[in-house]
Length: 283
Image (cartoon, rainbow, N blue to C red):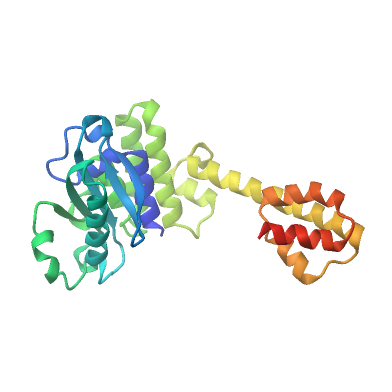
């Protein structure tokens, strides 16, 4: 299951969910934005950063790590990246906090001794999802996070509970995004099931959710790409005869937009060399 991407979808859609996990959230938590940032020299990619609004002056930046697999250098990476980014942007931020989300304690880095002062301070929050309590007693945002950790035999019933809770407690103008997140979690958790089987499991119609709409659009684009590829190959074979395996392979790897361009460009080709030059230019 792609848990990292699920959590980042949750945080992108509802950044305030993070602050249900930490004590003493900022007063302007509703105004925070979620982003990923790059730090050069050396190059670091920080996936989860919660940025305070610049309009409020210097604020607290939150660094977030979702860790569902054992990583014996997690704290080295987390603090190295975070401190460098904080140093580069010192004038923008007044302070920093780090949040590490684990499914359970046994996933945590074993040798954390060099960072004992940091991880025991009130600047670092270690969250163990299996210790948050009954999913039905938690705020909705925390319930979504816990849902990602539940075993398959338990997840469907709790997902249906969260769907019902969302419809009853969240305004209709806002609940579509939460329903999308719940169904996305379940589609990722049960990748081996068909759409119809997931619908039956949740008693919901996936055509109404974003995860199904995105899948449908992806399928539509794949269909268009196959049709365009067949057309281009047919036109080229008609003009230049049987193409070599190397050329066929290069054309097959082109994205849809490039195939569409090729379908027009080939009308001006006078020889197979013109095609080869065009393909070389794409690289």
